[in-house]
Image 1 (cartoon, protein in one colour):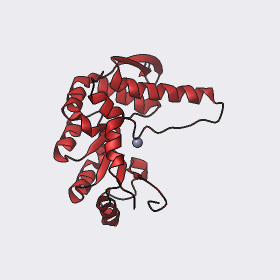
Image 2 (cartoon, helix red, strand yellow):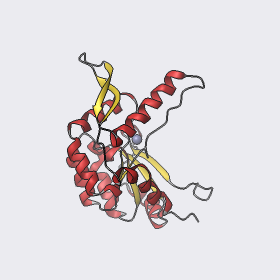
Image 3 (cartoon, rainbow, N blue to C red):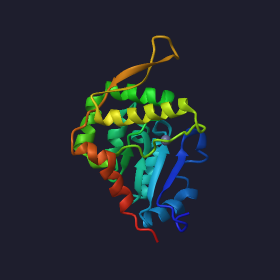
Image 4 (cartoon, rainbow, N blue to C red):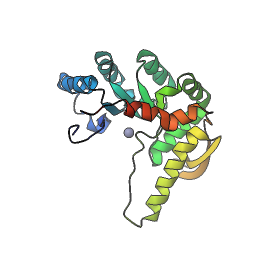
Length: 212
Ligand SMILES: [Zn+2]
């Protein structure tokens, strides 16, 4: 795929449902070695509640990987885990995206409660956080206005989290399992950090790669 023009890869294998074997299984070693030697941009989705130690062993064995770990490296509900990963692996970058529906609600809710800490982590090292790298677009059928509106809301909320004092998205309602339109406190990151997250860091990550 790289010789056909791919400029990077996304690996889903840290998703609970796609975790066929440990991330650091010897069967993956030659792939990581290849990606590391060529500085190919790699995006991984890893559930670090379950697979943090497997990911850590991959990063220790392949310290030059150009790796972005999605959804605050699966640690948006545990910023201690995120801070520990950033400290231990100085080349690791993380993405700030949240999915539609419940994953978004749970992520935005957890971050809102701990937003001063996340803002501090970003302001110390803004070059390590990227907007939207794993913001998966689930496109509806042509003319499906509900799907289009859901995507617009998801995109605006992910931008709002970084840029604004407040942004809108679904929230947990008083009744268990119900969602209602609501408002969250955002990070309202200052310049130049916000511009780096929204574009500059992606240019650095993707632009360093020289295809064969
Ligand atoms: Zn993901």
